[in-house]
Each structure stands twice: as structure tokens, then as C-alpha cells.
Image (cartoon, rainbow, N blue to C red; front, top):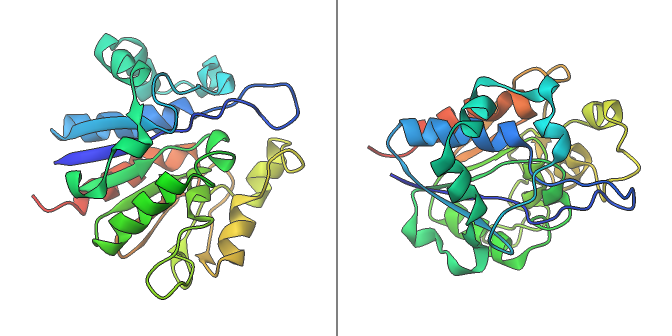
Length: 226
């Protein structure tokens, strides 16, 4: 099994002067789900190299078994520090693709032409596509054959408007994940704020928030032919 993980390269939280990036739990938990299942995991980002970590996700309140394991895993840290370039990978070499969230993807991966074409290729090949929390932002410009938005008519979830309000960033982010998915014709649903919630529609797997990341990864794994 070969799984591609695509991380953000964007580190600026709008005009706040604060840093953002990927959310540690949303990378670490899926990474270990994949590795523990024996999958070969390839990490890429638009710029390559070390993706920016959202500093808030490294605070004590947000640590989980997976993030603590990552901090004791030099091999995983080395892999993360040396991500390949997104432009250099293609769908044919992988069985599935997974996008961790964090606010970073709202600015770069949502607009990245290489990411858009990659997702469309995976979807067109009927291979699993997973995204959690803010990562469903990647579907903003993706389309399926015929030109319809990829999520149109599809059951999806992602970081909810109420969760964005709770973290005080509604006026900072370039768009709201929930609103965008609805605008693109997605059948959006959500659970209570911060509760784990995963939605599956065909080979499309989306998770609402950080607590959903491990479940999204396990669901994705279950879709890959053994």
C-alpha cells in the first residue's frame, strides 16, 4: 500500500502577524495509522522541505498519544523535515491520498493547481481521497468530468462555522470551509463542536475536526484493496 500525504507550505495567519500551518494531531494520528498498517507513506508539500507547524497545535492542551509518539520518533521527524514537492508526484504511483488540516491549506492548497489536478486524478481513478478539518478546503476548485464541482451532490463535512467562530478566526480566514462546501453543492453535515465526525461518500472521506483525524485515516485504509 502506498499512501500520499499532502501538507501545506503556508505559514501566515492572514494579516494577524501570527503563524499557522498544519495541525500536528491531524498529521501524526493518520501517519501512524498508515505506518502501523504497513503502508509506504510519502510526504509532499507545495514548496517541499519542512512544512510549517501551527504553533498552537504544539501546545500542551492539544497533545495526544500520536503527537507524543511523533516527538519521540526521529525517523518521522526526519521524513516530515524533508517532504518532496507536490508538483513532482502523480496519482498513478499511489493507492490513496490524504490531506491533514490546519489553517494553512485555506491559503495555498485550496488554490494550488498541482493539488487540484492531483485530487481530480485520484477521484477519476476511483481511489480514496481523505481530508480532515480545514483540509476539505482543497475541494474549492476541484471538478469532476462534466465540469461540476467535485463535491456537488456529495455528502461531506469539515471544520464547521461554529468551530471557526469558537477559535475567533471567522474574520481572518479567506473563506469558511462549511460555507464553501455548501456553495459548491456539497451535502454538508456536522456533529457538535469538537466531537469526532466522519462522512463517507464513495471514495471521498472527510472529517470535521482534529478529533476526527484518526477515524478518517482508518476509514481511508479500509478502502484500499489488500
